[in-house]
Image 1 (cartoon, helix red, strand yellow):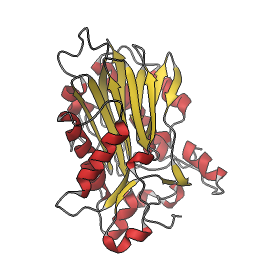
Image 2 (spheres, helix red, strand yellow):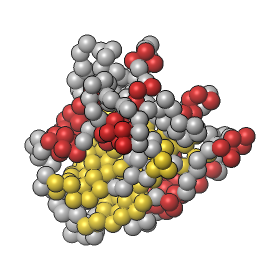
Image 3 (spheres, rainbow, N blue to C red):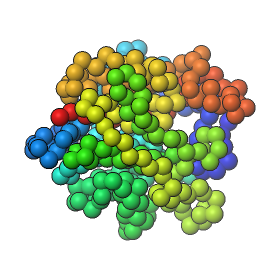
Length: 328
C-alpha cells in the first residue's frame, strides 16, 4: 500500500523483511561526532550561560533485527559515513555563541525512479552546516538557515533531485534560548524533570505525506510536492540547565511513544558524554527493534487506523536520534 505521489511513503504493512535481504548496513558508533558535539573550548564563559553536550545514534532500515541473531555493541560497530543512517542525514556543530543541530529524512519514494534519496538529505544538511561554520546565519532564525541551505542545493552545478523533511535546532548560549524550525514529520522534544515541556508540531499534507523540500527533475516538476523552508513551523523556548533535547527523524516517533522515550531518558546517569551516548544508543536500538515487531501497535499504526488503514506492527524506517543536555 503506497500513496500516489513521489512524496508519499510506504505504509508499514507494505514492507517485509524480504525487501531488505542481502543489503549489509550496520549502525555507527556514536563516538564519531564526539569532537563536534562537545562545543567549543571556551563555551562556558561569563557571556555564554550554557552549552550542549550531544551524542547521536541511529540505524538504517536495512539493519533488521530479524536478520541478525545478536546485536552489535556500540563500541564494536563499523564506522560508516558519520552523517548518514540510510536515507537520513544529520549534523552537530557550533559557531561562537550558538550550538546547532539538524536532521533530515530523504524521501525513499525516489528510489523507484533511479534516484538515491540519501544524497538530497545529506547535501541539505551539509549545506546548513557550512552556513553555520562560516557564520552565515542568525541563531534566532533557523527557518532562514534552512532556506539558505536549500538555496545552496538549487545553485549546485551537479544536478540533484530528491526530497527531504528537515528539523533544525539552535541553542543561543548567551540567552539560554532554543530556536527551532521543523518542516515535515521529523521533530524534537524538550524534556524537563521527566516531562515533555516543549515539542515540535508535525506537518502533513495528508496521512503519511509530510511537508518537504524538493528538487524534482524538470519532467516531473508539476507532479512533486515542494514546500518552502519558510513553511517550517518555528518556535523559541527558554531553557533551563539540565533540560534534555531530543531531535530525531520520524523513524523514532513512528515506533516509540512518548512514555517509552521518557522511560529511557530517566536512566541517564549524568550529563557526561559517555552517559548520553549510551542512552541514545539504547533508544535507537529499541525503536529499531519495535519497528520490525509485526504484532506491536505502534504510534504509526494507531495513526494509520485513524485514517482508515487497518495497520498493525511497527514501521521499518531509517532512525536518526540526536540527544543533547543543556549544561553550564
